[in-house]
Image 1 (cartoon, rainbow, N blue to C red):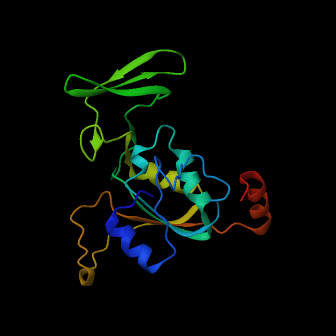
Image 2 (cartoon, rainbow, N blue to C red):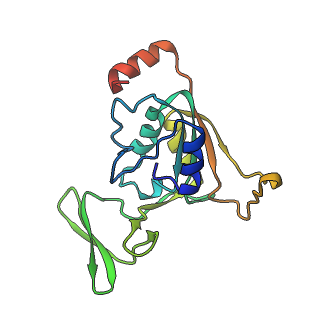
Length: 197
């Protein structure tokens, strides 16, 4: 989904691969997966996406699981910290807009109870005014999000692999590999009815 061309172009040459977008065709909204997208994919790459999903983020993890075939694989990269909880920048997000005031950007939010909040010092990935960072994940919460969405096992991929030039300098924000749990046939039939897959 919105994959870097360094992934997307080689994968499209080798596999039946689709690069999806939130804001253009072919569209994919992880929090509202269409029934024709459900249960179709052997693997999903989700690279640097979930930190930009509006609150609450858990439905996006569930959407990732819905996309996959039974025992399908998720390859996930997302910025995260170890040994700490997730930091939600805008925990009460409801109706909001990002606007420029002078040379800086602010987020104005109206909460569900009608109170207004204004946030400055926004963090954007890809440059000022590009893609707003909604949170910084904590590794323990990230593992809980994946487990609660039906992924097991979940493995952090932190081992160097010199033949491919892979050397990890840090111990956080490492790639995560997660397999969708196989569910019994009766549970699969129930899920098809609920999710239209």
